[in-house]
Amino acid sequence: NAGVMQNPRHLVRRRGQEARLRCSPMKGHSHVYWYRQLPEEGLKFMVYLQKENIIDESGMPKERFSAEFPKEGPSILRIQQVVRGDSAAYFCASSPWGRETQYFGPGTRLLVL
Amino acid sequence: KNQVEQSPQSLIILEGKNCTLQCNYTVSPFSNLRWYKQDTGRGPVSLTIMTFSENTKSNGRYTATLDADTKQSSLHITASQLSDSASYICVVSAGDDKIIFGKGTRLHILP
Image (cartoon, rainbow over all chains, first blue to last red):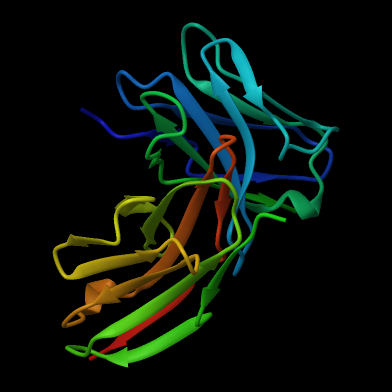
């Protein structure tokens, strides 16, 4: 049973471009969470999704950021018109139900030039 | 306000020594508390999960304690190894499904 997969592992974008981060949860997990971690900082919750539904997006910036978890395929975190402050590690986690112990992916490190 | 405070912020110890990391929380209503280990450049990995009624839980050389009255938890690492060098994150779940992360303690084990 493969763990949580994230790709790409590293992503470099210029200011104003779009960044798409993908997360494939563990097999059998229908709950996905996205977190952002700045250097030397703790994890910050962004959004919690179930298949085709956003359950809690209270941690996600209102502009430029969006997330989806379609019926088929990975969850996508999309950042439009990236700015330097978006540079961070973005972690995805999944769980089989509710907010049970979450299994984290290796993260995507986004660098905005 | 729901908060999770960890101390110390960072810690350096010699290989083979024991250490204890602290976590204080002001989360209400409390649901459970987890300790995660995050190696540099990787995602966090769960070490222990404790509910209100549990006050001690072990996972190998890691022992977590929970005092729900004082809202404190500790993670004790016995006979530290170089591979224990990592950030240790305390995470508290509230009854309303919110999850609050501490900023972590960065532990460095020296040979």
